[in-house]
Image 1 (cartoon, rainbow over the protein chains, first blue to last red):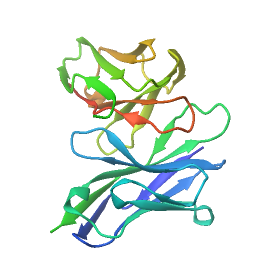
Image 2 (cartoon, each protein chain N blue to C red):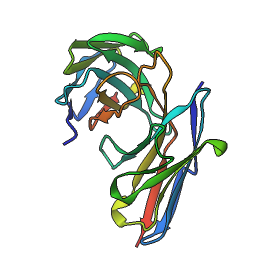
Image 3 (cartoon, chains in turn orange, brown):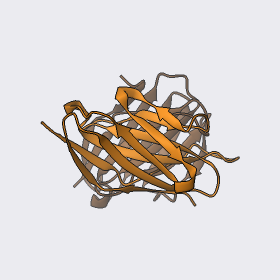
Length: 116
Length: 113
């Protein structure tokens, strides 16, 4: 069975500081991995996805994530936080095996606070 | 504008009411999904439809009844709900089932009183 663990339900950084949101996954088959962002009272927006090409994936708004198979991790980073980055971030895994329904397994989410 | 539109955005209903949530996607996608987002819990997949056929029912109680009349529309019919069913219900679509990007609507905030 697949699962996702996001370490830290709340992360607080100063504006301009590095953002690091942690995600570890468990999967019996090579996974597809995603990061989504949710602003208050909104749906989820895809930030980036890993689908077996380059292990370093660049997304929107300056975010990137690195797939590390040996560590079963897919941490999200951004070199310099902006106030508009304050939101909730979700890591998700999807099975790439046959019979896959596109089901996403989500982590608990991490709320990012950006202080001025 | 995400291409996936959900109505209503907010809904308050009593436990004896019957209501429906609507989702419409303008992206030409073949797969549609209902997810439930409760406070302090991860998003949970409820239903998956592909080409208007239900392909997954994730152990959802029968008081939730999905309907997919065509590949652009998805409904979630609600009846005799419980207060613990209060949550944000999110609709999503993807080009096909499998490992493609899912596009989410803004959700319907449901409160059961």
